[in-house]
Amino acid sequence: MRWPVVVIFGYVLLGLELTVKRALAIGPPGAASIAPSFIVPFIVFLALSAPLVPTLWVALVLGIAVDFCSPDEGGAVFVIGPHALGYMAGAYFVFTMRGLMRRHWLSLIFLSVLACALAELVVVAFYSVRGMYNPSGFVAWRELLRRVMGALYTSATATLLSAILLPMSGLFGFQDPHQRRFAARRH
Amino acid sequence: MSRSSHWFNPRSTLTFTSVVLFVVALLPAKAIEWVALIAEPVRFVVYPVQEPLNRMVRWMQGTPLAPAPGSVEEYIARLAERDTQLLAEREQNSQLRAELAESLNVRRLNPEAPRRVIAPVVGGSADLSSGVLAAKAGERDGVEVGSFVAHAGVDLVGRVTRVSARSCLILPITRRGAAAKNAPYLTGVIMLGDLDKGPLCELKATGDGALEGTVLDRIGTQSFAGVEIKPGMLVRLADKTWPSGSQMLVIGEVKSVGTEPTLHRKVRVQPRVRLDRVSEVWISAADTTGGQGGRP
Image 1 (cartoon, one colour):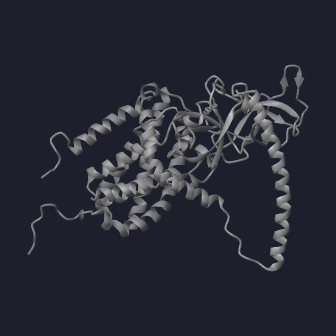
Image 2: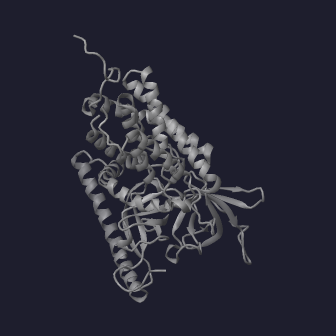
Image 3: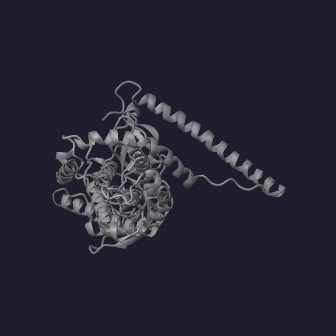
């Protein structure tokens, strides 16, 4: 995997997550909005082709960045960990599923929805536990419903990103996951 | 063979980092206050990509497409319309000049009067549930924690909750749980006319971009029980826990009127602008040009 390419794409997609996501949000304003993710389809794209540990590192770093850009309690507190661990869970899920699927745009869309839902489930779980000793008006079932709808909406961004990322996968320098590392060369 | 050195193993470091994050994510708010110190450099790193994308979004949201050239008659009609607009704006301009001169007089006489900084909103939170907005004005501009924020100087947006040197975070009034612990309600006055104040109401954010609360039909000896409250009436801020400069800013319009089980009237108030989509805000700021004016 070529790290500079991953860093550039990750950086731009983080920017999209912070700006365009808000503009694409549907439904009532604020906390009730349903918005797609730009980062999850990228992590899914990596998890479909790249080795496990580098993919998890990318998910972790992007998740920490999102956590740093998601202040809680009205900007008073920054909780780092929920998105990082959520994205890692999503990446690991895709990694375990990739043996069953081809590297195809439909796989990317389908797995993006599932990975996003899983990541959001982890985030809601963390905030629900925190809510037990740190009341902040976080209603778990409402958040879960909104975020699952957001995961479905992520299929739109996953479609767009699959059209961009899959043709450019050569740039990322992935090895064929089906090629064995120490396989005997056939003459 | 692995190229990683003996002290950095990607797999074990990843496990260790995950465990640390798991623990940190569950620590109470007091124990993770230090995280905010790292958040600012992260925002600084993200800003170069966030700003152009934000400009692009604003352009896509707000700028109308140039009209196609039409016939001569259309051109003449548009010219006449522009003339009317020009006259109207000249009139408005002279009014604004007078108001500006007046406000300069106020500032000369009362240095404690808040200064207002116009700041572009440079994005919000990656997680929309936090509902926080980030604006490009900070300590250097005199913005402080607790400064009130308005849209176009008229509609109340919220309060500043965190300030760094160049940017600040704003908590909109429509964010569920936005109210302070010592003041759980936002008190507004329902306007019966342009300058005619009606009953007070205690509002709380509903979480879907609106506020809802009980109408206080009796204030001291004055009773508003017979006063009809209609949808469309303006609700202005009349809350002693907010800075004096923010009083009478518009919270929103009455959308519906209902009755509570206690038979008190309740109103649902909707801000006139979508607070999560404002592109520019006015922030009250302390005077940084000299003296001690403006600081509480």
